[in-house]
Image (cartoon, rainbow, N blue to C red):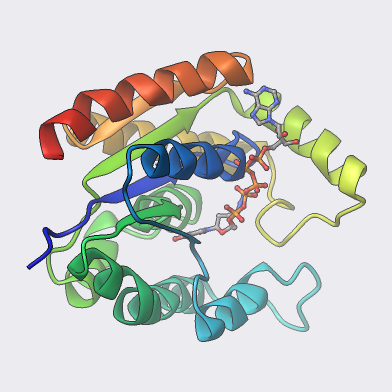
Length: 217
Ligand code: Z5A
């Protein structure tokens, strides 16, 4: 029977480099001969991606209630776990996911002000004890991250999504909530200084991976 795979998540505010570095982590693991499944939240499945579109719609017909937003995040997550993450881990694949439940504590908790205890109830209900083995938190001041995001949006001529339309205070609260989560679980989290050059960021990520992967593999 194959050994259970490991679950690695990348977290951080908007524009810190998560999407860029999901590829780096996956390729690094593949180079060690591991089967890797790359995925993201909200999304990762056909139904989950439909929920993502609903959540990110920048021009909704009506305001999305914060509780509805929270429940949609976990609805997409339940489908993602059942259809993709748990089967992959069970067959021994490693899962690299762009955002997971720490994002819910940061955005719906820190950003929207929902009590942590209410989020934790849903976390238990949906995840039944599963949590990532390693979380790479890409951390940088929100002003610098906004500049990066701005230049990516203009390069690709993309529109801001519903979350990207929030103001500075929201992103400051998100950053603080992420750092608080990392402080509560220092063994699971590696906090990466995301303001450095891409090479320097990836050197930090490689250090974090090396330290764990050797022990797990
Ligand atoms: N959300 C939530 O509220 N609750 C939840 O539970 C979950 C999510 C799971 C969608 O996520 C939204 O869902 C998200 C939170 C919410 N909203 N926000 N904000 P998303 O992950 O798709 O959205 P995002 O954070 O906006 O991701 P992003 O815009 O794709 O940013 P990123 O992935 O962190 O950054 P990137 O695209 O890799 O990099 C941005 C640019 O910087 C790009 O041009 C890169 O080439 C460049 N870059 C990257 N690294 C560097 C370095 N080191 N130096 C210089 N330039 C760099």
